[in-house]
Image 1 (cartoon, rainbow, N blue to C red):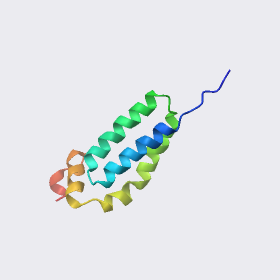
Image 2: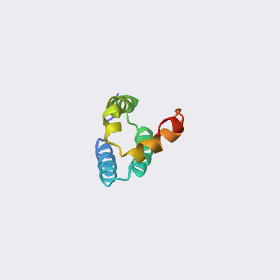
Image 3: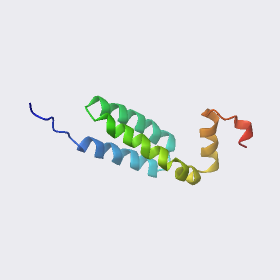
Image 4: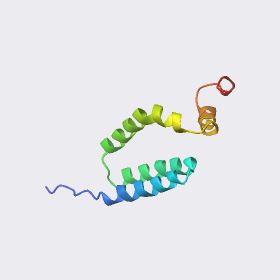
Length: 89
């Protein structure tokens, strides 16, 4: 049985697009693209282990990235979180 050869170029293009949008400062659009690209890559045959590894990296980087957010961006995230927004002001 022949092993399926993976095409890594799709992941590189997805990362490039998301990186450029994130550098432009539009975090909301970048997060939407991350979700859409992740689903598309999983549908094209990407190993779920890559997705699990990506989620792990996000969990490890979250405390560092949180401090780099502007206060209004932090408040936008806190509004949709389980925390009460009035206690975060």
